[in-house]
Amino acid sequence: MELLVIGSGGREHALAWKLAQSARVRKVYVAPGNAGTALEHGLENLPITAIPDLVEFVKKNNIELTVVGPEAPLADGIVDAFNAENLPIFGPTQQAAQLEISKDYSKSFMQRHNIPTADYATFSNPTDAHQYLDNKTAPIVIKADGLAAGKGVVVATTLEQAHAAVDLMLVEKNMGQAGAKIIIEEFLQGEEVSFIVMVDGHEALPLATSQDYKRLQNGDQGPNTGGMGAYSPTPFISPQYHARIMREIIHPTIKGLEQEDTRYTGFLYAGLMITPDNDIKVLEFNCRMGDPETQTMMLRLKSDLLTLIEQALDGTLDRAEIEWDRRVALGVIMAAHNYPKTPRKNDVITGLTALSEKQKTTDTFHIFHSGTCMGGNNGKEFVTSGGRVLCVTALGDNIKMAQQKAYQIAKQIKFDGYQMRSDIGHRGISNIRQNET
Ligand code: AMP
Ligand code: GLY
Image 1 (cartoon, rainbow, N blue to C red):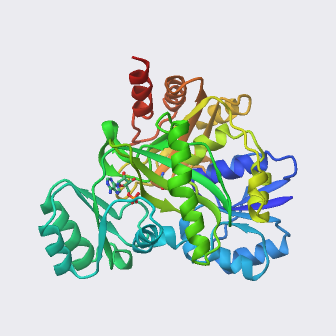
Image 2 (cartoon, protein in one colour):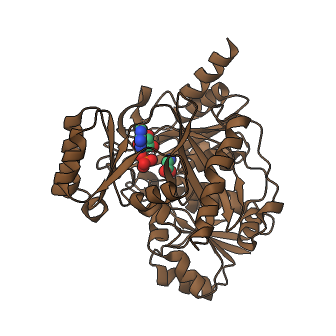
C-alpha cells in the first residue's frame, strides 16, 4: 500500500515513520515533509500543500489512506474535500474540528454537556471585556477564540496584563481574525497532562498518556510555546484518574458530538489540568495528535498504526488491541534562535549524520525533524527552517534514564543559537520521588 501523511513537523515525521513500519506499507508520502522525512527509509516528500492538488495526487496514484497531522488543513476542510471524492482520510471534518478551531464553540460545547472546564466568558467588545475584568482577580487567562499556533493564550499574572491583552487582541487586533472574539477564563492551578484518544465516530480508544512542557525555559518559565519536550507515560495519570478521564471527559465528549449530529473520526487530544482538589478539567481540545507528544508515543507504540487507523475508519475501535513498549520515552526539543517569536532560519546543524546512521541499528532513540531542510554552502547540509527544529526522543527504563539518554544524544547536535530546556521530565521525576518517600 501507499499512504500519505499531511504536514511537515516532528509529529508527522513520527506518524509517517511508524506507518512505514507496517508490513503492508510500501511507501508513505509526506506532504510537504522536512529534511528528516526526506531521508527516512520508506518515506518520500511530496511538495504539495493545496487541498485540490492533494486530492488529485491521491486519485492519480491510488493512495489508499491519508492521515492528517496538523490542525490547519483540518480547519481548511481537507477531510470534507476527501470525503466528497470517497477517498479514505483519517481526521475530523471541518465541523467536528470546531472543538479546536473555536475556543468559544469548544467552551459552550463543554457547558452543554457538563464536561468540567474552567469558568469563562466570551467577548468581542473591549469595553465589556474590561468591565468584566474589573470584577475579577489575577491570575486570569485571556485567549483568542481562533487558531493561533499556541500564541493566542495569555496567562496574566496581574489585572494590568489582562487589560493589556484584551486591548492587544480586541483593539489592536494583533491576532487578526483569530482574536476578533476572546475568552476570559478562570486560572487553573495544578498538573497539566495530555490525554489523546482515537475516535471512530462512536468509540474512543485511549492512547498512551503523556506530559508536555509548554514553556520555553527551564522551571516552566518564559513564554508559552508549541511544546519544548514531552515524555510518555506520565505518572500523574494513575489508573484511577485514567478511568475518571474516560468517564468524566472523553465519553461525554463523544456522546455530546453524536447528540449534536457531529460525527467525529480522528485523533482527539484533551489538554487537562489535574487540580490540587483532584478535579480534572479540560484546558483545551485539539483535533489532532500533539507535538511533541506524538514523537514519544510513536517510539513506544508496538501495534500496527495502520491497522488501528483502519479500525477507526471502519467504526470497529471497540475491537482494537493496542500494545506499548513498557519503557518511558522522552523527547527534547531543540528550537531555533528567537523561537517562539520569529525563529532564525538557515543555521547549519551539525552532528546529525552520524546519529542518523546510529539510529538505524537501535530502537532506543530516534531524532524526529520539524523545522529542517537541506541547505548550507553546497545544499547538502541540514539547516534550520522553522521554530522547533528537532525532537531528540529516547527510551529508558524510567523517566530519569530516558532523560539521560535523550540529553546525551542531543548534546552531540549543534546549531547556532539553539534553545533547549535541560529539565524535560523533571515534574514526572519529582512525582515519583515524592511517592517513594
Ligand atoms: P490552550 O491553548 O488553551 O491549551 O492554552 C495554552 C496553555 O496555556 C496551556 O497548555 C496551559 O499551559 C495554559 N493555560 C491555558 N488555560 C489555562 C487556565 N485556565 N489556567 C492555567 N493555565 C492555562
Ligand atoms: N504539544 C501541544 C500541542 O500539540 O498542542
